[in-house]
Image (cartoon, rainbow, N blue to C red; front, side, top):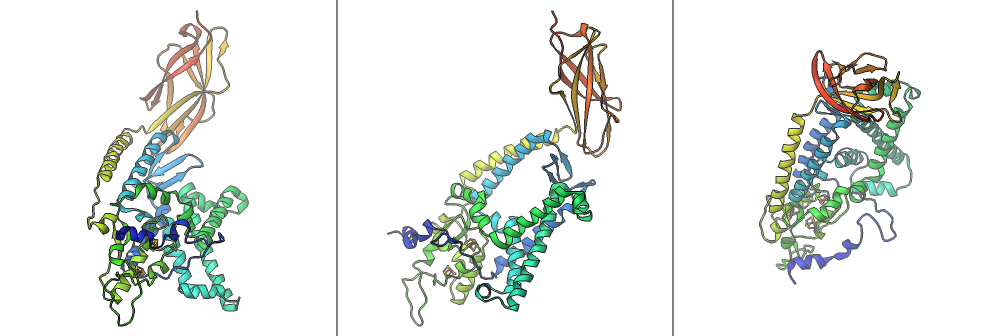
Length: 472
Ligand code: SF4
Ligand code: SF4
């Protein structure tokens, strides 16, 4: 039997069960051993940078606008200080497809590296909440013992203080998330005013805090192994050239404990110490091969390297490598699949850049008022009511004027109070009465050219359908 086949029949139990669920279907709580080593240190530095960016994001302004605002409630989005509106939906759709292609390329080339190194869920779980837990309750074995111990004063203090700090961090995260959704100023207002002044905002903050607290205090790795759809994508995206955290089964098998004063040449380098399993935050055994639960956190690499150094073997029994790298000793990032996806990415990026560069800063929509028909005055003038929306995507107020350009004697009159001005980064919404002499109608539908002016200059000319009686 080939060594490769041997590995997969070595212990097939894992294929039919989840490492975090027992035979009765109950959750097995994961107590990962405290990770340490050069990969962990690198992750800690990356996390500090990413968390700093994440928490400072709402405070960063570009031209007085937030760096990032994703206000799905009001349909207002600001990315890198540039405002976008629902009218830019196609840009979002295209950007989303582009993002998806980038994710695919990255996953085909590097597996689930994003999850272990950059995903906010893992950053908060492993680099914030887990660290607090180690600090208060100690390493895995101490945590197990503490959980099994009766409720003494020490246990109450430890558990209570841990949950309190978890709650404080959850509040901090929920306020940051809300600042990205509704803006920092709005969050400040909610915090400074009594809950009754803005009940929906207050409830939003409480619900967010509750969700974050529940995820990080209780749900934990299940978010990555059970809920996250990205993990499931691995099955279709990971190929034999994908570089991910891998156990070198060629070198490691057949595994076995080291016996004192015994040299067994038939044995592989894996001494079956299971330290790679003990440090795993998702509770899996990487020696069973690539699994969807593996978030590529590299904790098992550090653990195994440490063991290899102690037994005087080369490090890298678990390493970042590909299936082909392990079997054939060939490492290839630019496979035909990666190249093909990269071409698609390039085309999409070019198209999106073109659309962004030619994007109109003032956008006008004219929609006939729903439920209205035309009106006739003195059998000579026909009128229609239109809803007008003007989106100002610039950082300066835009005064405007509307005229009907192609029909002499036609009039356009505002029936909404207020000035004809769109404030910076805002939307104007008003109702207009359009009047056309009956004699100028060309049929039951007449095309009108609406000219939008600002400070004497034509901004845009829109063609709209004006309804009238049948003309014979
Ligand atoms: S840490 Fe290394 S040596 Fe120990 S069980 Fe895991 S792979 Fe084998
Ligand atoms: S198998 Fe290794 S890399 Fe994957 S999640 Fe577990 S510890 Fe992290």
